[in-house]
Length: 427
Image (tube, helix red, strand yellow):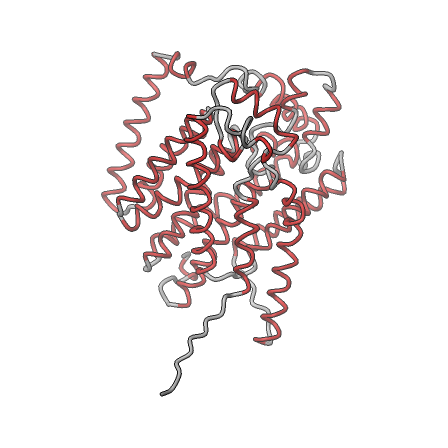
């Protein structure tokens, strides 16, 4: 009797999944010590993959598309800023980070890699979500029994959050927790929209509800916006027109309600947590506009906002807590990269968004549609939260965005091989 042997090799690219699942959730725990080593591990491992591919196929397979070329041009522009930056070290340091993570756009990792990545990330986020609910019932969970898991630099801020009725579970930071819950919401919602399984809808509700424990107002509103955006951009024909009409009506209704009853927004405010409500437009944003007024075309160099604001207001009490970026990436773009850089970066962001929508409509495989939908909604999350957050400047959130873009590129490449997407026609 002949023996039947089954041999299945695991792609070497799958090793990257663990580092990504550690960096993207960005927990303020002892895992923070791994962020810097993993930052360097990722590019060197991708380089290793390139070498293996070249040795096996006698050529290096890279992704070459117009959007990748546009992003490469953006990076070159940011690197050129080192020449005139007011803080060359800060500009060079972040350009290195941006370049390292942007490698994913040309790595041409398979669709199966991203499918497994989101499954693993979803499982981790689900566990983190449960920890938030437990934290709600056991307020001292992270400041008491599990305090040994919290990074030393985050314990004071975490204690302040907990004392104000804000809970983030194993994230140990409300902003990271809210962003992570949005990612979990996006993955489950995308699965539901393409497979219509009740478990995905139920999970979406759980992730959405968990955001309210974190006290992050903007990140609690974003999931609602994402639902309407998903319905509008995924649907076609008359159905899309109906969704647009409903969205316009609801938006107008909500606007009228908030104008008539401003106390609704006030009720969402969490005092004692270092909220930026009074700091953004009175201290942070004016500094960015001053930077823009003095360097309109090219700005002062990417990642220089902190250097400028600290040099101007070294003893300001608000800055001692919040002198960390402008909490609006577009306003900070104006100050750091001027009109030219802002237009260039925003053009790239919009171009990727449009390309992803086209990919969703042209993809034939349900699995690929789900991945493209995840990519689209992560881009929207990153863009919208950028109005009040620092999505471009927090390396974990930027990495999440780049992974979303590379997911879309992987779907395009795979569908192109199958003959389902004709890139020459704008797909």
